Image (cartoon, rainbow, N blue to C red; front, top):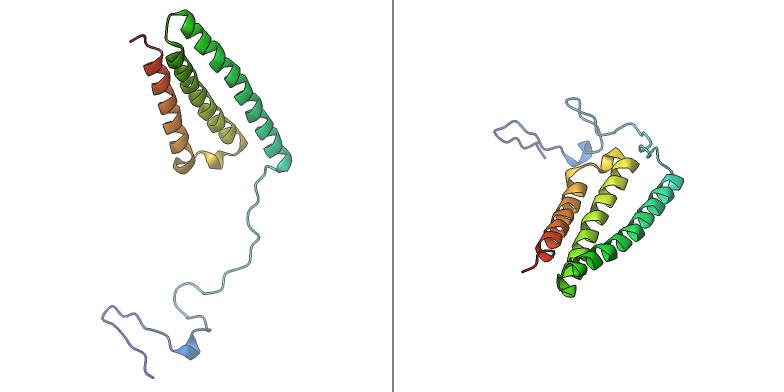
Length: 134
């Protein structure tokens, strides 16, 4: 079976040539290198998780205090509670972004920070919208 050639000069290898590396370009075998490991071990992950849980518990108390202060300002309790949840969402997503950034700078990328930024924006919108007396 002869090698087929298309107009761009690309040649298809025959079945007996598939296992052999070609002379031009890059070789098909790559040196075996161990994968890079994170400089942060399990202990650092546990500490970061503990910090995050502590912050979320503290933000829950802040949410309740904020809702109570809005009720004192004659905002309806349902709206005040929703504004408190909006503040909690904002603070929690900002804390998650901060802990991820402090843990590893590889987490500061579009794929991780965009959902957190959207959640923070929704939280701020809910806080602003529901803390008004209308």
